Image (cartoon, rainbow over all chains, first blue to last red; front, top):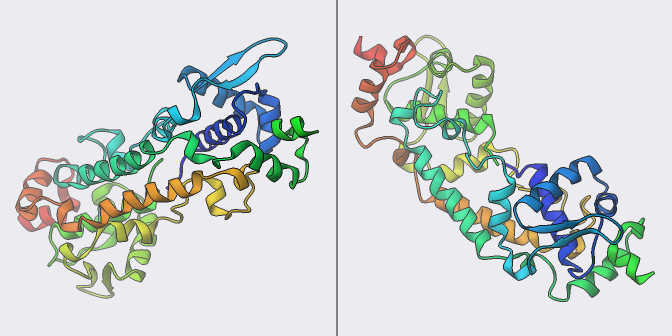
Length: 160
Length: 160
């Protein structure tokens, strides 16, 4: 039971942007920073843009920024928007008359729905601001400097 | 975000057995009933046996039965035992010093842990008995009769 890489990368990108919300980042910089495929990150950026989580501007000085304050961006929203499905088992995808022959006698679906609701409710009580340290920027700066290959970081870039 | 097929099949098998707990079923019968790979179901049976969820006996008259009453088998236990991992994102697999460079500044892990705990707590409040109808056996019998190819069902078998 895992989130997709798509959602994982979305969280990474949002956290990266939240660490220095005033600064405009680029896709190349973010994908280099995390050592992940730029192609994959382009798709994540597109999806987050569509959902109103980030703004993207083209041209010189353009790039990515959070569309909202970190405190106004609930973590549950991110999962609901990024995950292709929150149906935990096959028969939930396919409705009550799905492929599982036990479906007519099975009450598991409703219980799994309630468990998923509890999962999302917990995430809805937390914002992106809770996912970074209270003194995010300065702390992150220190972390990044202590890591190898820090050239791709917006924060390391600033502190050079 | 989905449970593995392994866990999905475990739930199907447990529900199948719970619908008629006194009867001994066979792996072939269960995999035929659900139209799933027997090979896969053998692995599920082995794992559920190891976890003390079902008993398996060899030879004539042998087969599968629940090791406990449905009411004594919490659904959260099944997921904890069957899922290869309950780490929602890559960095949770690898600990705090995992591959994600944002890990030192990231507080998402702890929030995801709390969300997963809420998910499992909901499932721990429900037993296998809650996953079948209160009048499980008779209701299931009717369901199965109304389905095509009912020959593989233990319940249809009884009602022949």
